[in-house]
Image (spheres, rainbow, N blue to C red):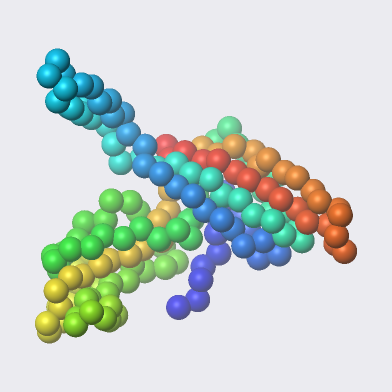
Length: 172
């Protein structure tokens, strides 16, 4: 399967800007408190949002200086999400990219084998595989985000200039 392009605000990041490094984490309105006898309780006000960073180093800048960072931007990620379990119907917890369908694998005798799946809204239905003990569904997510203008650096110490860049983003 060919790897799609990482895209922010409709601008694909060129491969010459360096292979992107992606880091992400979950966001939530979660607080934990210890009770008088030491028991831990957790209060969740909201959950299910994501944030992260994108960075790279390459022969050219990523070309994102023309984006309006005061407005929401569409971020087409390359960092897969996945859900593993025994169910043949899985509800995705984020929106998949439109240019890359989710894919499924079945664990049979210690080997992960591809198996067909169908996406309908946020529900993925997996085709059963004989003797499978687990299934996993993976997808590349699409987010609407607020992002920061890229931080940049330039190294001219080698035979050619190297452009470094980094962006932080947070799902709306």
